[in-house]
Length: 326
Image 1 (cartoon, rainbow, N blue to C red):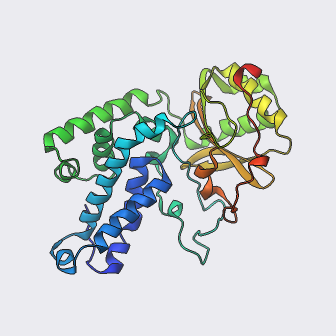
Image 2: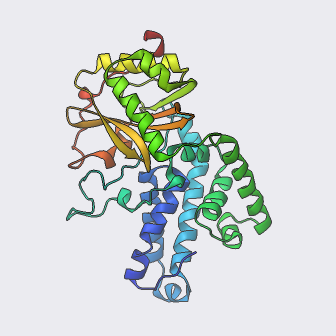
């Protein structure tokens, strides 16, 4: 699963790959970083004689990281049953668009978000589908279909036969196939649609928003119980449009920015200089079919321009009205 030297420099060079694997397995940058750190702690805790016996430290680290993620996925469902409202993956910025503390131009430590390769396998729609898989399916699918690891090595991670791992990946593949949008659009076309959504939202033009939203569109928001937000998905283009305008009415000074979110066009809402919401979109046939809005401040840390304040200013976060108030 990887080939690096036995030196500290060699194992440290594997970190980027491990962060990429762990984020796709967990959907959480914070948990991914913790899993990778745990794997390194176990590596450096081995006697030097044992380290020397390991032919490929990279493969060893990937196996251990994947097993840690598998354990975390097993307990995640119970933890998310206690989560307030909907749980969404942590959104990732494209740091070529804007700087932040700890980024490539900083003298501080590298931010884990900088190490994530932004491609289709981190698109919010894709990560949401991964959430529907069993832990074993997710590990088998991500390691094989995304990172091209052989099933024989995945079998070691899962403690199952190679044939069983192939079946798990096939089952996961079917989930992805069913959830995939029937009419994909180019990034440019999607960006155009989202730009029009931004303009209509800023103008509080309900009719224009309705025209840009699929009649069966669904909006899901994640506040984690830390900021006000709708707890259940808002369904229907007309209801979503009314809801978006109600939000704008309750948040004077809200600034909407077009930004890359998980490698695709998205919107960032900022108020009083603080990012309060990061929204991802799915678009089909020129209309928005899904909106995922992350408002939990713990999931927005990579979006801070100049680092994260010691205390998040909850007072500037608008309270999202309940759908029936719209």
